[in-house]
Length: 63
Image (cartoon, rainbow, N blue to C red; front, side, top):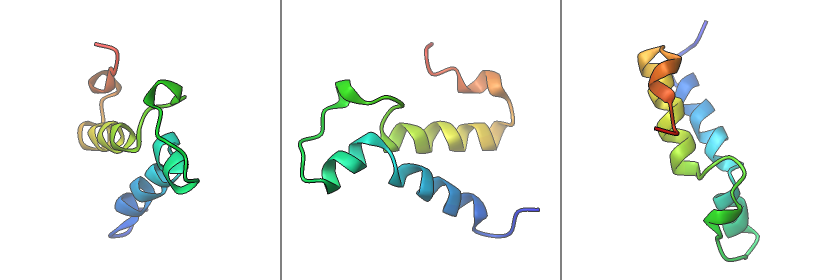
């Protein structure tokens, strides 16, 4: 069972380990072409979309 705030906490944790954030906090320039799994913003957007719709087809990031 999820409690209030669990989803937001999970989304925040997801963005904390994204390539763009890690590059920034390490003092390096951010290079989107090097991202293995997208930016923090993209991760947050698609995770939230999946949670809101509960439909995997709505999360087609390639279309």
